[in-house]
Image (cartoon, one colour):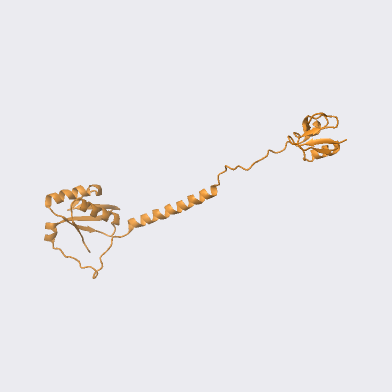
Length: 202
């Protein structure tokens, strides 16, 4: 006599003998939670609850949990690529910025520009003399022989301009002084009211 078996909740049953059902159950084609109806049964019963099949269902290994693709999973590959590109970009820009600070100040080649010559008296009467040198690894700035910190350079120059009425700067610096320090000295001079800047050419 044939038995009817169906997957849990399925409206399509399959007919087979008890021996075929037991063999299919052992082979894993059916699960203990699937439903069965014997020749003498009126209602559908879970295989694990049917007296004729309960022992076989109990001996079966529990099926592995079903896995489903997680559609919310974030793909990290693109994020890692972007981070690497940003890292290389910041490394290169940092290197270029460090190189710019080490660039030497522009020099005047003889023959290309006419070099103005001033006497000592002209310098003392019309110009404020600023010297910038590297001593012991530190940049030392002197205004008329007086050491001045870079952040105090503008107010110091302004006092000299107000006291002496000199509006021209004579800047003397060595090759170890970085370009950014030279630019800050020039900006301080302009902020103090000086209208011309002259460089000492060695």
